[in-house]
Length: 117
Length: 121
Image (cartoon, rainbow over all chains, first blue to last red):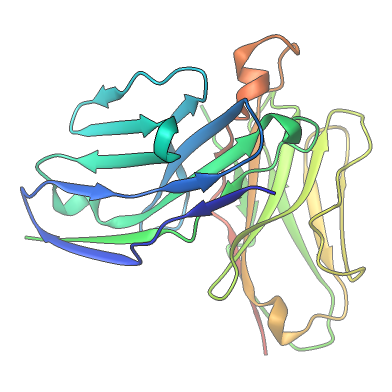
């Protein structure tokens, strides 16, 4: 069975601070895919990134960066110089190769990020 | 282009009534998913449609829940005899299903609609 743990329920920072959202996953699959989604107050889940288990290269996109470490089963997300518009709930998700037929995502419980001006 | 759309955005119903929720996926997306988001349970998978294949209903919580997808496009999620524990936001997502060897097929990148907030009184 797949499991995704986001231990941080809520984080509050002041604008321009850096913040890291933690994600730890469990899977028995050797090939799997990890995702981050953002859910702003409007409610719509917005896709941010996909990472394949066979590609451990970290990625940076503007102020966003992701640190994937298979050794610790973690896929952490860092926002540099946070802005008020970053305030949202962020979900980490997993899909294992054995789920290929099912193609459903297993989500973590989410981390609510509040960025204060 | 247009994203995934869902209607209604909000639905309030009385316990015991039936409700229908609609999802219009991104044009050309052959895979469609329903999820439920509630305070106590987080985001849960409900059902998955892929082209003309039989749907994967493994996430449906009870036989009061059913879904269909007509013409490979629009999907309707029906909840019969609603209960208060059915109150949640129901999210629909779609993805582009390419050939089995294509990375997109294997990765399952899904695009979500705005959801329908269901309140059962």
